[in-house]
Image 1 (cartoon, rainbow, N blue to C red):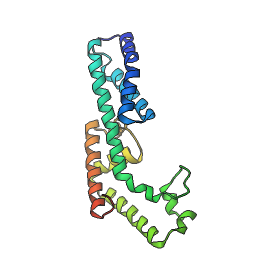
Image 2: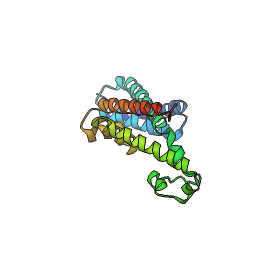
Image 3: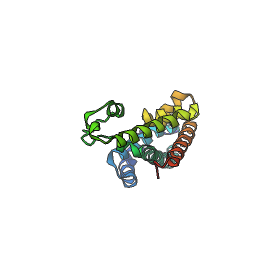
Length: 187
C-alpha cells in the first residue's frame, strides 16, 4: 500500500510531464490543467490504497481516459450545438441567453422574417427531439450538456453508474444528430 508521502511524491513527479502531454493533446492550457487535476484526484480517491509500484500505470490509464472523456464532450458539444452560433446576436458581449434572444431582443428585429421563422423552427425541432428521447437519455443529456455536470455528478444524481451515463448521452446525441440531419440542419 502506498503511503500518503509516496502518493504525494508520485503526483509531484508526474505533474509537469502530464500537463505538457495533455496540452499537446487538447491544445488548451486550461482544459489540460483541469484534466490533469481530475486525473490526480481520481487516482488519490480511488487508487490511493494501491502499492506504489502500480501508481504509474494506473495514473496513465486514468489520464488517458480523462482526456478521451474531454474529447468526447467537445465532440458532442460541437455536434449538438454547432447551430447555436446562428442564434447569437451579432453584438453579443459574451453573455448570451437563448431565451432572451427569442423574447424580442432589438438586434433580432433587424433580421428578416424568414430568418426569425427559420431560427424559431430549428429551436422548436431541437426542443421537440429532446422531448422525444427516452426519459433516462433525456435526463442524462440535459444534465451533461445543458447543466454542464460531469459524468460522476450526473451518475450520482441519476443513481446509476458512470458507464450508464455515457451510454445514455451517446445514444441521445446520436438520436438528436440523426433527427437534425434528416431535416437538413446538420451535415
